[in-house]
Length: 368
Image (cartoon, rainbow, N blue to C red; front, side):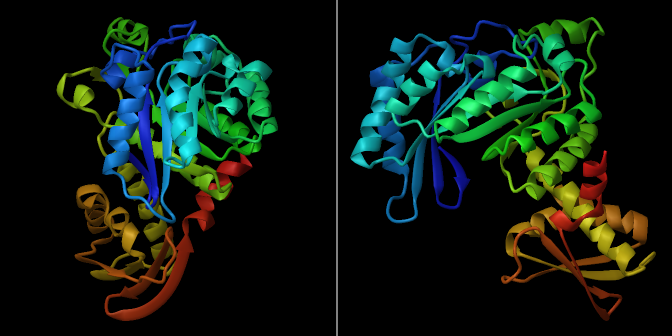
């Protein structure tokens, strides 16, 4: 069970490596999901029912069935109906509140949208990966940026929520291309986005390229720096960032499936912490603080771990750069998430505030 928000629960149904007419250089769905078999109607029904037994109910609780993996709308229409039917039945009964599917941009048409609509699907996520056609070609995606525009228009026209999945660090990719992709996706006004750093997985063409020196993956530090910019761009545009980084799984963590690349089980926390560090540093500069022994940072409760950094990384950063020995974080329950206040320096009360959307780095990115 995936929890997207405080009252939003996702029931994942994986349909691995099915229907896709291409083999992307980075893709090995069986490695990512740990699944080999496609579930049938009975298995989907049993799976969803089991999840529902563990979920809270009542007003304000949203429960959604999500079909992940593979390319859902590229499989035979009869099988699509077979897989969607159990979720649609529960939707009609009021036991769930939504159905989403993930698919390829070149596997969306008027007929497909009609089928999805008839089974209550209300969200379609497109595996865009990049809006740079050279990157798409080198990655073996088999679709172009124009397919993304066309598919997005279909989803919007049918009144469904539009989601995008983008990937950084692909063959031929660059930070410039990633920022371009983000700006192009923002222009399409999506409802949500997922950002994944490209990993080298066993059993993929990318693994062969890596072993032969034809591909150099991003480091974790580099991936975090790029994703921090993407996060700020999408937040400025008020696009919901559902995920940053591949979700940890037993298969990836314990079986050594990741040969190389920026995999970290707390990757989003690294990114959020990098943004929070930018905020604190911005406030210190605004307060003309070059050295200090003690500072007091006031933050909303949910952001304390980010301001302190993963495993205290930000605390150590400011100690090394500014000589700060006491890095105090004070909770203010009335502050909105994403806002950081500098309220004390060496025992002196100060009052400097910055939200993530106000960081100058966002304007610099958008000016490019």
